[in-house]
Amino acid sequence: MNSIFDELYEKYHQDVFQFLFYMVKNREQAEDLAQEVYIRVLKAYKNFEGKSSEKTWLFSIARNVAIDSFRKQKGWKQRIIEKFDWSTQQVKDMNPIPEEIAMQREEYQYIYQCLDHCTIDQRIVIIMRYIQELSIAETAEALNWTESKVKTTQHRALKVLKKEMQQLLEKEENR
Amino acid sequence: MKKISDEQLEEWLREMPKLKDHRDPHDIYENISKKLEEKPRKTWIIPSFATAAAVFLITILSFNYFDGASFNHSADKSTQEEAATEQNPSLKREESTVENEARMDVGKEENLTEMNDITFQATEDPTTAIYAEDLGAMQVFTLAIPDSQVQNIIPVSFLIEPSDQVDQLAHIEEVMASIDEQEWGLDDFYPLEADFSIDANDSILNVNVAADHPYQDGTASIPFINAIQQLLIHLNLEKAVFTTNGKEKGMSTGHDFITEKLVEKTSNLAFYFYYPNNESIKPYLVPFTESFSTIEEAFKAMKTNIDTHNLKAPLLVEQITSVAIEETNNRVNITFNEGVNIEDTPETIQSIEAILLTAQSFGFEKVKFSNVPIDTLGRFSLQEEIQVPIAANKQSID
Image 1 (cartoon, rainbow over the protein chains, first blue to last red):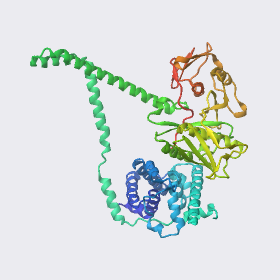
Image 2: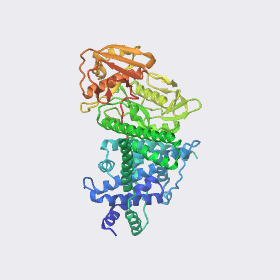
Image 3: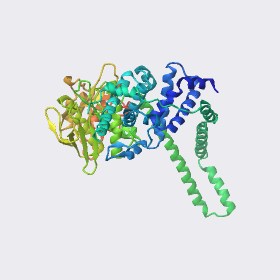
Image 4: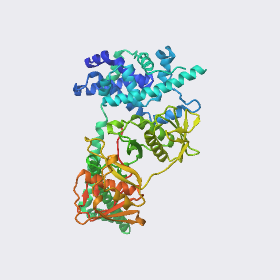
């Protein structure tokens, strides 16, 4: 195998895969996209200038790959609207909750569902900051944003999640 | 039910289960190498396009070079051979249409390059507004964003893809959540802390706020109402109906309690410059809240700064000697002082924009300047009538 691939796989594969899985919420798609990340990385590796860290560079590519895949899914917004169940005000999740999460406490399942209420940018920031545990500075570097933009987006994302979680938990309690 | 704290939520997020890829790295590598070995097809597009363009150009050039003569000749020859002389005129007619078409295509090409020039200039030019030629297939959406002192409300416009009402609302909410107003030197105002839904049958925008919503004090409620008005205008709805906590009718705005607002288009406003901070080069072009009954009065007011609101008077308005309205053309004719000095500077170009935006606010479509000593200023041809912009203060969203 290619030595660059080897090294990248060892260091980052599971991180990149997990990021993509939480983004697209579909195992097969995440697998395809992870491959796409390698293809882009291996093509561009010689141009990697080391200006940013290898890790944030990989995440920035993963993010672009994820966003491109959303764009390619024609009219994904339309689909979200179609999926929106007006009677319960909830997005029906077409992709089942992955086993790893379904076996866990309910709160994690709710969070997984509530991520759908965030905008793409908000979701990226939440996954990078909390699930991948990147720092504010690393997230800013990966997204090519200012740190203040990361902070505001994170703040807004938490607000959205909190509101949706509260509603879900209340509904559960009233059952 | 106890409220979820930020800390609790953050803890849950950090504890989210790990999702792993169980595939063998060798399989992954194999899949990738297959794709890496595939020759990229895209590289063919450019050469074949270039060939097509070359063939096209040669065809046109040869048409012009021979001026159709040789074609007549060969046509004659072939018709002679067929001994069908009556067909000659019709053949000639066909040729001339081919020729005309070719010429028209040349004309189109020129237009294209001209258009490219315009867009090229636009990336560098100091204009701030969105003009018809910038539009393409996109739609304009304007957000009302307060400045950092919450004194002025600044219309900031975006190009978004056209779609139906519900989708549009979702898109706008996405824009509201993703913009960073502070980066633009403005107040962090969006997203709005309210839920929206559309009742298309009654042309209503339902707006629901929480009991502790942040628009209860006078200063925040004004930009809030303004933002709702922009939404109504953009979504083409007649009124907004407010609720609190999902069920109680109306909402408090501090000194007022509102249940509904009809769409209201503010017009007849005068535009000034607002510089958000010293570093920024481009000003925002901002309408002051006062409405005027005639455009002349608006131009008169625009001669002086409004220091209380940090609004700066545009240049040139002081040099206006007369304003005439051509109602049939929906056009304003503006005459400058003899000997007016117009320099090609960003501020002058933006001053022309302030005049155009003011004209637009009064419902005019075109402006014609007289006594202008120069022909072009940035993107404007000053000797010809100029179309007013579509919206003020273009911003792009990433």
